Amino acid sequence: MQDMMTYPFFDQFESPSEDELVGLDRPIRVMIVEDHPLMTQGLRRVVEVEDSLEIVAEVDNGDDAVRTAKRQNPDVILMDINLPGKNGLQATREIKSDPDSENISIIVLTAYNDDEQLFHALRAGASAYYPKDVRPSELLPAIHAVATNRCVIHDEIMSKSQAFRWLIRQLETFSVLGDATEEMFTPLSPREMEILSLITRGASNKEIARSLEISRQTVKNHMSSVLRKLGVEDRTQAAVLALRRGWVRLEDTSK
Picture 1 (spheres, rainbow, N blue to C red):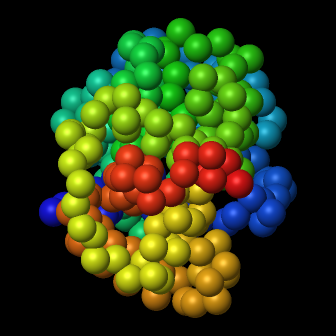
Picture 2 (cartoon, rainbow, N blue to C red):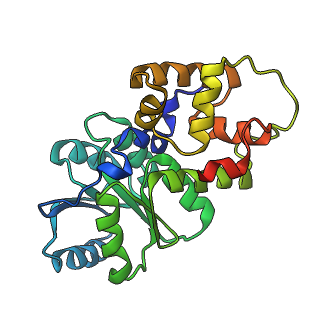
Picture 3 (cartoon, rainbow, N blue to C red):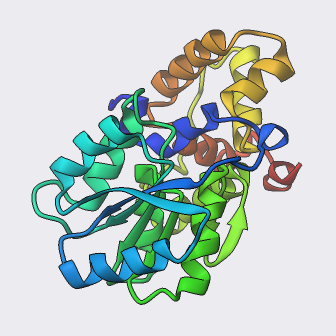
C-alpha cells in the first residue's frame, strides 16, 4: 500500500479551517512555471496589472519548480502541466508533499479541459485547474481564492471540504477503487468508525481532533490504521468505500 502522502490534496485538510481564514495584508506572491516564453509573457502581464499580486519567480521546468518553490515560498504557483523533466502534476505532488512548501497553493494550467484531468490535478495537490486560454477575469479571482485556502472547480470557488466531496463523487465516476462492491468484514474500532464518518463529511484532521477532543497526532494514527485495515491508499478512497458499503449515508456528507 502506498503512503497516504501519495495524494497530497487530502493533507491540505491540515490547513486552517474556514473560520480561521483571513485576507492577506500584503501582495500575493506568485511564481510562474511555464516552458513556452510567449505563455510566460502572457501570464506575467496578467499578474503585473494587479497591485495585489507580485511575481517572485519564473522557471521553465518541473525540477526547478520544486527547488524554487522551496526557496522562494510563493503563495501561489501557476503551473503548466506539460513541462520538461518532471511534469506539472509530478512537480505539484512533490511540492505539496514537502513540509517546507506544502502551504503553497497551485493552479494547474493545461491545453486540455476535462473533469478527469481536473480530478488528477486536484488529487496531486492543486487547488484549481484551468485551460491555457483562461481569461484574466477568471484567472485573477482564482489566484485570490486559492491564496486564501480555497479551491476553484468549474469556476466555482469552494472550501476544501466542498472540493473533497466533489472528488469523492469523481472517484466513483472514474472507478479509481475498482470493483469494491463485494461484502467484507472490516475490523474497525468504534473510534475509527467515528473518524471515518467525519472524513466522509470532508472534515480536516484539526476539525476531527476538535470534535472528538483528541490530538491531531492521534487522528493521524487512527487514520493510518483505517487505511491499512481497508487496504486503500488515502482518506478519499476510504470515504468512498464507506459510502459504497453503506456505513455512511451520502446525505450525511452535506452536514
